[in-house]
Length: 192
Image (cartoon, rainbow, N blue to C red; front, side, top):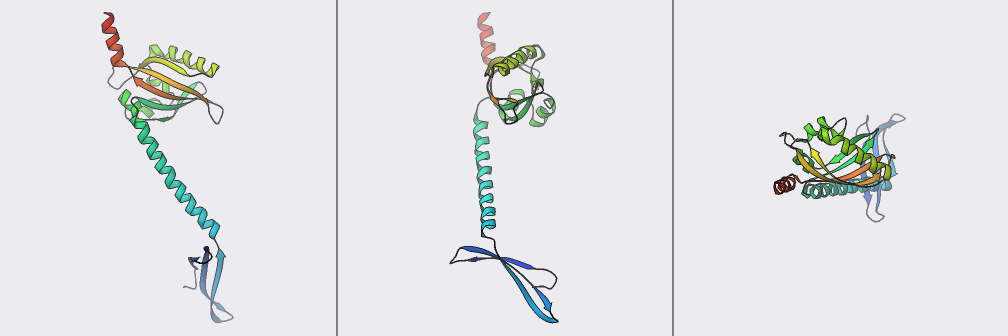
């Protein structure tokens, strides 16, 4: 123990299962050396800290498992919020990056203003009308359109999105994207 600072330690009383915080320091009492000790029951506080640590570990494990599950889905998964008629990305899987060929950083940069930035210009009005209709009717989206890719080749995607009202009152869509480019190419070659 020192004179200028407290020494602090926890003590678990085994019979009562109570945690005490013992804080003590050396001082002088009317000129004589003295030892001052404060004892405080901190059981509920320490149990709360232990529970928070346990819950944090559990949440991290659940997030890790969720990410692993999401990344096994073929295609891409995303969550969007509609704010002032802009499509704002809240979450997306690595599969969405694989569809476009862009890294997360590149995709984030391209889509920072509006997630529709990766939609082919000719398909934007079609997608906007479908989105407006889904919001007005609070309904799901089921459509096919072309996504821009890093290679410059279009990627035909089938979009299935579930409508939801977000916590802040804005419309949200939980979306699954499937690459149907190969299917489209086969269909076109069969028509020829």
